[in-house]
Image (cartoon, rainbow, N blue to C red; front, side, top):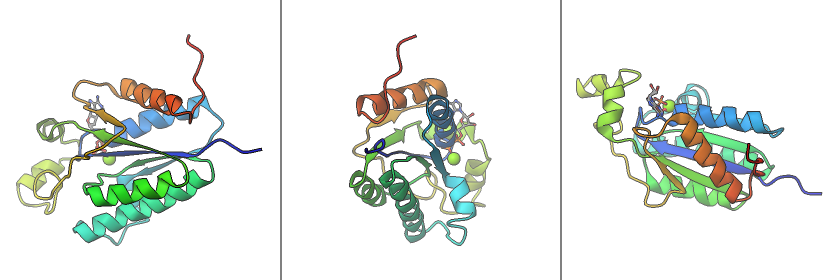
Length: 186
Ligand SMILES: Nc1ncnc2c1ncn2[C@@H]1O[C@H](COP(=O)(O)OP(=O)(O)O)[C@@H](O)[C@H]1O
Ligand SMILES: [Mg+2]
């Protein structure tokens, strides 16, 4: 007997775009639904331990994403569900992760496309203000690049989409791709 196919939902977007908020909303919905364990690899959490020695050069950002991708691929290979929510500003690193994961299971890239002005207005951690003031260098969107993904399974602008609705869209996508069993309509 074979178990369920593993999958990874990978969020990318500017700081403050809503990646962590959406990742947590999706995590709750997935846990509600199933027996399947779900691993969350959030950007900030990963940088505290797994990538604690890394900075914010392109090389270090790419290495951070490669590590996240490696773990997500291993979990996916064994039939698990993984949610990743780093910034992942570079297309080449995202593509490498996609290839690694698609070789062993499902990969859903969610581009959280919330515009810079909105992210900056929210500034949940005060990082944009510090970046504008020159206190925080190499800050994505201000003084460091963000490459918009040319291809994403889902594009979600949280200016107009609530976290619950975003989670719902991702669940529907996972269902239509055959990674989750559709729930009966209420
Ligand atoms: N519809 C929405 N979806 C996600 N976040 C939202 C939304 N509306 C407002 N926010 C707020 O935007 C901020 C997003 O922060 P966060 O999820 O930490 O972003 P990121 O992880 O991308 O840096 C939070 O303060 C959140 O409450
Ligand atoms: Mg975050």
